[in-house]
Length: 162
Image (cartoon, rainbow, N blue to C red; front, side, top):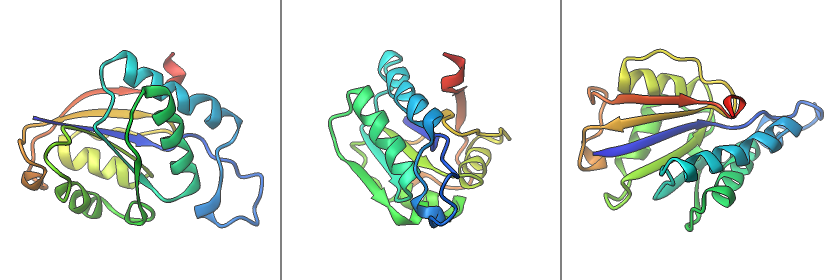
């Protein structure tokens, strides 16, 4: 059994329209809520073995805040492919992961995360900024993951629920 945690980056700022989309930082609310996700993971025994993040600044900053609050001791694996991608690309990345990583957190973007969630669980759910989806996957190796994998959505959680 593998666990996949899908986290949409926290709320980002639109205060600087001159910035490229990739470089947009978190806004005040995003900076407040991102660490709460890390606390949630720690308190619920969901600290990941591996964190993957889009290279977009808002995703990187979200992943870093989660890392600091959750107690995760590794480094964030930054993936350019997780920015402006699609669910198929996310699957390819996940299939390449080492099997010693049982619980993986992916910090990414919509619509990719919503598409991946639907693909793996048959559940269509809007994932707002800062929201975490917890999916259990009936696989023993990441290489087994595919479009037909019958994942089970365990929970959708948002820092606004705290």
